[in-house]
Amino acid sequence: MQKSLKNSLYLGLAVLSLGTVTVVSTTANAAAKTKVTSDVTLKTAAESRNVEATGTNALYSKPGTVKGAKLVASKTTMKKMANSKKSADYFRAYRVSKTTRGTVYYKMVSMDGKYRGYVYGGRSVKAFAGGIKKAATTKSATMPSNTTMYFKTPGKSNVSWTAPNNTQYKASKVVKDTTTYANDALVVTDAARKTREGSLYYYVTDAAQPEVNGWVYAKGLTTTKPTTDNFNDKTDVKVNLKNADGVVIKTAILSKLDANGGTTSTATGTAVGDSAKKQANDAWGKTVLTGTGYKYASADSSNVSALTNAKTGDTITLIVTKNEVVDTPITFYATTNSSDLSQAATELKAYKEGTTTAASDTVVFPSVSATFSGTKDASFTAGDLVAYLTTSKLNVLDTPNYNKAGSSDKYYTEYTLVSALPGTYGTTTKAFYVASEKTGTSPTSAPVVSGTTGYHTNN
Image (cartoon, rainbow, N blue to C red):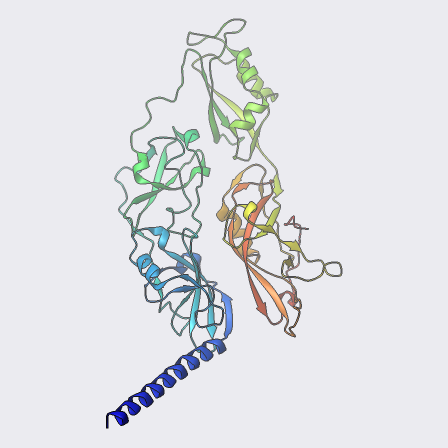
């Protein structure tokens, strides 16, 4: 009887073992057969695609059930990010895939760029679900009673941003140093608080120098007007650089001026015209007007007159003129990590029919209705360039179809815009894209807008 019982146990274990093997094999085969049926770029407004992990699903290099998917961030890591108190752990969703199983996966990147991959998103493309949910990275805050403020400690800290850092993907500094704007009155027009950290930010505008407009950490501002602007009325002359309409474009100080024919002045009202003309040369004007789009000519008769008659303690007016409108060339790069540094990216090649062999990096640059242009030497933000590329439908670029050894399928690579650099109009700038290889007919066979292709420098 004991022998019979022992044989029965052995037989039962063998059957159970066989059943277990069968289940594992079936799951593996099912996973191996899962394929992506569609993979498209999300077109809704970028800020509407800010999401956060729910912690229920891991992040993969491909949709998780597709063969070859590698783990990017474990379920444990995603749970920590879901409960994080840091805005850097939010995500921006930018692509959506469907599989033969009817499941949906969203491709996303963390706000700090550390993690990028696909997460399970439910079974519908109409709403985020599964491993992610929509996130409000900021919330409205109460406006201050006094809306006129100044930079508390001018310099490289607490500068203005396109958005509070990490509340939008690739939020960037508008200006990197506020020293130049130390005495400018800033008007607060909006207030927001970072949802996770709770830190307060104000959106400020600078009427005299609008290139500084942006979001500033509230503790980096003060309502106390600076008590000094380093002006010495015994040795210096204040300068307002105005355009033809009388608008002040920039202010400056001519300092430590010599009395005409003598040494450095130490008395208010001393004639210092000779020294003022020498200091306020064309090179000085170019430096003062950097980023404004205006130019100064020291030889202009009105400027010569104002400088010649300058006296210490005076405020004089010098006339500046607006530069001409110029095109700004763009160089397009492919990057694997959304870096804004071209050293970590590869310049794309321009496909030229009849002379270029189609490949994964030979992009068709379509015609557009207008180039990226503006007043020469005036500053533009990364957001300005992104807006131009999006409006011109250059936010997605494709290669022609190409073949791959051992396959009868047609392939093409799609490049999606992820970031751009700020700069000044007329000086070549850069735009960065990430690649996604696809099968099927390339969209480049579709008609393009009539216009110009002179916006890019890629060969």
